[in-house]
Image 1 (cartoon, rainbow, N blue to C red):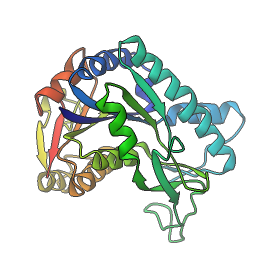
Image 2: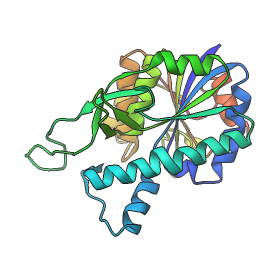
Image 3: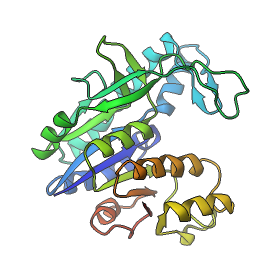
Image 4: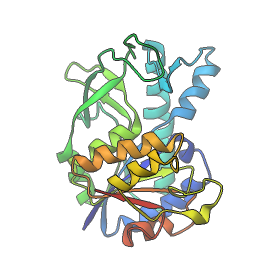
Length: 270
């Protein structure tokens, strides 16, 4: 059986795409070990504003003070996780919602202050933001091997019960590494890495790390796709066999992407 890790952003969970993806997940779970990791940035930002708070974002990264951490717990480990599990359940899958404090699914420590590109010369303290130390492989493998679908919210925890906000892409990478996944699938708002962002038919079906770095240097890959590729390259360097960037999925396309690597989206390989 293949082992597949699927990463969904919060924007996917609150869109019509969830029902399409959920049906494919339910179908794949019959003969594939699956683990889903999700974020919840849009929902967290919306609740922050509804509570009269102002999101504090530096160089594209969220500063997580105590109040913001509470928001992340309420949205990412709360509403988003429940909504995603409910959508999977309706499609016939057997989801189990988890977060970092669920038997240390994601063990983490507080990120020390660091200099960040685009934020000036001084180190930035991101507050209750964590860096991943390890993943509870035993728990995730136990669930997925028995037909359940672990659904992991992007929060970490330490032995003292402190919780941390963590970027969902990073959590998905670490989960894929821990599970020695055959593939990590990143569901985005674009169908693939494109040679021309305005032309969906310009899909690049396969990229090696060297080819991806060259595409960035040549300006073919720009904006938000750059950090996504760089994080994917890091995951490949740590043992993930392939990272697939997919999006705007139609019915059956996620299943096809898993069963026919490279047929949908862009497959990144070492």
